[in-house]
Length: 164
Image (tube, one colour):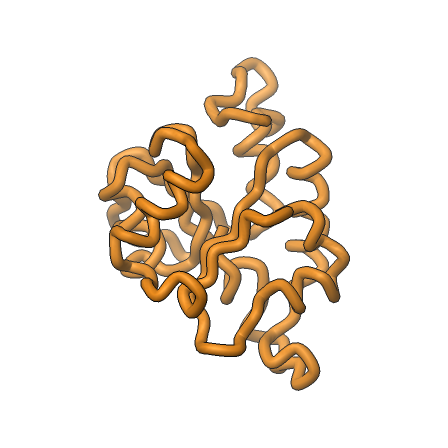
């Protein structure tokens, strides 16, 4: 999962204590619900040196939902859209690309690069683009993500996404 404008909103001001926008209430609930449903969560975020997303996750009381699965470009020395960040995440999580789903808000930095590695993707965008890469889905708002992952939005279908 991405951080900026995926777990946050452009309508919220930067919290100067955190040094970034805070996690939205909707995103907090989604992360909590996914964690409770047994979905393994990871954060992959482009950051500047000293910009630690863990502070914002802790302030939102959802840091425990991610465990040590927080991948910050400033710590890894590689940023999205570079394929090496996805290679690192896949190796660290010990999963095949098709077992991972990445949700982000940016086609160029999140969706196309992850999809090029075989990762399933969800674009968070209220105005869906004309085309998405194969296997990609578009949702208008973060509260739609749990239903997509757990299959609760299609009661007659089993979820295609792996759980823990």
